[in-house]
Length: 276
Image (tube, rainbow, N blue to C red; front, side, top):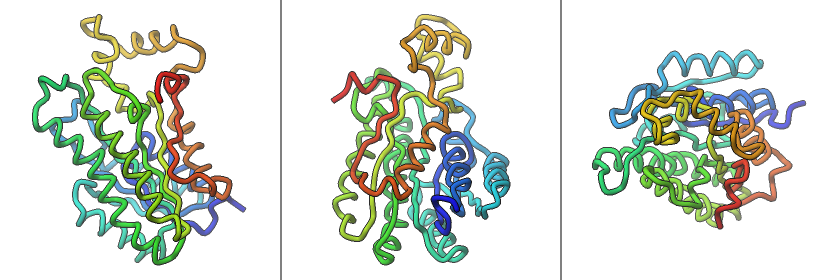
């Protein structure tokens, strides 16, 4: 018997990275999965985004665990599309028990030089997208009087960050949404939490644009330069594996996480020592 037998989880941003790790971890624990992703490029994002083949690969990995998976192409910037994803989950499985609002992007610029497009895309996906996802699913959970919701924030939801103020602002907003929603739905047996990881070893970090931000003193830094920087730091300050974040999410959505509500669970290798 798995911890999540009989449960259905809806996961945004599930074509690869953290979303894929969550989908597989929850499937191994017994949940059926509905996963969605934009699966196309957003012009302001400086690295290759996921594709429809990535989305299909997530579905394949879930199905290899013996669980069912519905994989859908959808954009969290659209309330209409997120409503359709939620309705498809209900139509196919009868209910949604778990919601992981995970979709997100990264990009870099100083605030003084930031283009409007960079700001608006970040807020639309990383903050408005979480709101749209919540609004699509929460009424169904209220009606059923049960649910587990986890949003992917970031350690920067509690700190400033140079050359990514728009990302920090969006993630601070996610934390505010999580805490507020947790108060609104607690009487319906629904918990709402956030995970705040530091650097996670995904395509969002493993790309030349991010290397240049993390190693600004080198003209063309490589992955090896970045990994050497982490290796030179304190123990356990290296990049976090997506599966490690998935383990924390699994705890929050399973029975042993029932007393977590309105929480910001930080997984940062020590970075949280510098935050409030």
